[in-house]
Length: 176
Image 1: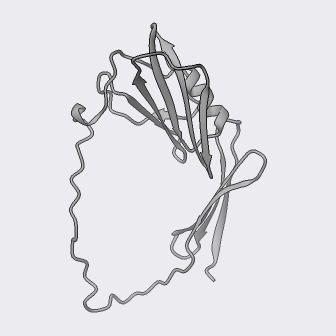
Image 2: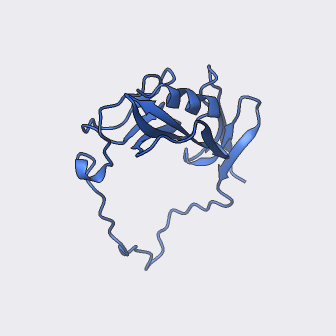
Image 3: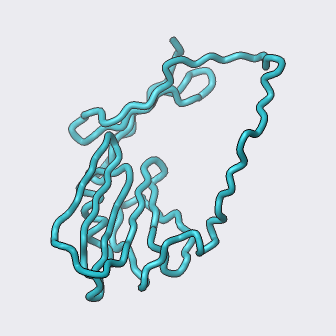
């Protein structure tokens, strides 16, 4: 029942999804977002079922802190898995940038274009696995994994994020 401004975001390439967003005209609050595939299929919808605004804060509505989470500092290398070598992602779609602080030989690298995010994980393996790939797609999220050899060392490369399958595959294949 709220007046909304609709924003349609269409990708200019095949490496990302589109979005349809509805913002509350009065407050700018994101009320609904849909992730759209290249075939204009809605992959995922997130929306508020009911929103109530009030100018008055009821008495006794103060929030007590129930739990204080202890999050590791992002520059602490002990919080990241490591691999036995330096590695690189050789290709990401245009417009995606790395979000990680360089930490030596971390087992994870994360990229974003401002809307979508994906992470690439590298795990050392003791033995080479059978050739092939694994794929799980749920809504707008993709998990793609593939066993590879990098400098004669067997590794498992996994790409997890809000990108099409072919993008995840191309990113994984570019790891060196």
